[in-house]
Image (tube, rainbow, N blue to C red):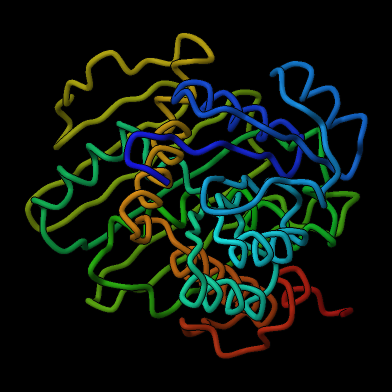
Length: 346
């Protein structure tokens, strides 16, 4: 790809999040050249809305000029990603990275062995709010305590509450606060987790998770991911150290504070769809992948980062099953989904 040419984008999946990625592509003037879905009618609806052709999965354009966005359910992430990487494509894989650590290992190995690039879609890492928070938090020194919460109502669409998805609130919704805690703790890493999960009434998956984390430098952390809140989402994160506290409110409105005093953010309020895709990192992450393609480097959120989050998640589900803390990296089965690690009937 020449330095002046931008990549095209192909959407592997045609749900709500694929629409958001299409909006990000439009903001960057990256043409969407194909839309594919397990449900052809859904692919056709999105394709007509954005002015792109609907194609079968096998016809998704691949190669060094293309970004393939994989936004299928997590259990269907690994195979199309491996195929796209082998062709030299760059791949943006929605979170969670996949459903088993064995598949995560395959993706990490493929990213290292093929010319393609992989970006794990933790969009908040590329949002202006969190980028500013990470910059300010670095001045505080090692964390004594980090907490991140994602609280909202139970989803009314998709397969989020099915065992086939791979897990419930912690596996899917919790991927965001876990990633923020990991980023804020660096260079320390998570070495132990202890988790409590609450099963959704009438379902087999968790809808509330409370996870305690221990870092390699002795700091502590907590993540709460819940579908028992609502109707509006409340997402926030804070880091405390010996020298101060920094806190960000992500939803419902972006706010950043240091020791209780507001930090000006500029015009970042989500006042419309274009603001949303920019302010919550969707444009930034697609731009980062495009830049990584041009420079021949890995993006910040690569396959190893996605595997790190899944590693912590698997340990948390195993902890909830046993009632005991679990070490990270996780030493249990790499072939079981987080849900299977938690569910005693498997």
